[in-house]
Structure formats: structure tokens, C-alpha cells
Length: 202
Image (cartoon, rainbow, N blue to C red):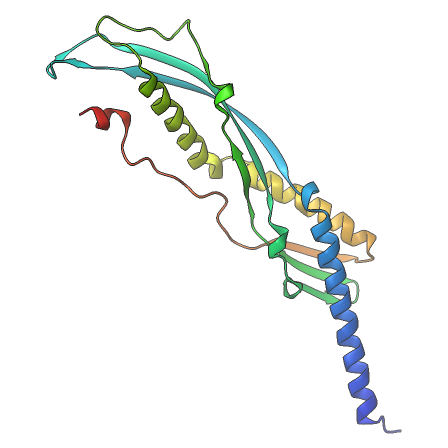
């Protein structure tokens, strides 16, 4: 028995529409879980430094020592506004998803957490730590934290949390074979100081 071509076309259109509807449903569900697919990490950093000055540009004077405690709060996750239906492939109970890359969504380095350790910080004769020195130590510490985040386990931990969350949601939608990957991308933009405190004083 011959099947009319029009019927075949209608079946194919119906099948494509069903798959598109499924993909849009998955995208909608994942975007609704955006806040759950994030991690917040607190990093405590001790800032240590010494300050050395020269009298008349020639004679070295005593070194002044400095110590302070700072804290950075990092929120990492996925910008799910970047997720598109084309990032999802569905075949019956099998689904593949290419999620946007994990990135730092918020980096907070509050000055209110900047605490000077008076037991270590000491000014010396003809050499003292100025407000400008404090600001420079503070900024240098922030740069060091930012530029070393990629070496921490924050990105991996966020990926694992996201994978578990999304896989659980997809199982509830009836999918049995689930594959989740992450697109490549920058975790956090690195910032480099133009010149160090010592270079500014030369």
C-alpha cells in the first residue's frame, strides 16, 4: 500500500514541531533554574608587605612592615540567557545539551573587610606606611585574587553542581540518557596593574 507523499510530509512536520516544542520546554525549564546553578565562595587573604624608602634618593632607611586581612566574595555560574534551542539535541529519551561556559557573575572585594593587623604593621624612623601605600597594597591583593581564580576549584565545583541540577531536572521530564557539556569561554577577565608601587616611586 502506498503512503501519500502529503501524509509523509505532514508526519515529518509534526515530528519536527514536537521536537522543537520539547527543546523550547527544556530551555524554559533550565532558565528558570538559573539562580540554583550558582556557587558563592568566600576567599580570605592575608596581605603582607614591606616598605623601603631612600633618604635623598640615596640612603636606605629602615623597612616598614605591613599586614592586613581582606576578603573576596565570588559568585560563579552560567549566563543562561545565552542558552539557545540549537544547543539542545533530542532523540526520544536521549538528550544532549551544550551549556554556556561557567563564569564569574559577581566579584566583590569590600573595603569594609579590610582589617589592618596592628601587631605586625610597624612604621620605622623616617619611613611610614601612607594612605596611598594602603590603597596600593589593597589593589594589588585584589588583582592577585582575581588573576588566580582560574587555578582554584570554583569553576569545576560550579560545573558539577550545575550538571547534577540540570540532570535531575531532565530526569523529571522523562529523559533517560542525558549528556551535558559546557562551551569553552573565559572564567574571569584578568586585569594587570600598569606598574607596581615600587616602580611608581622610582
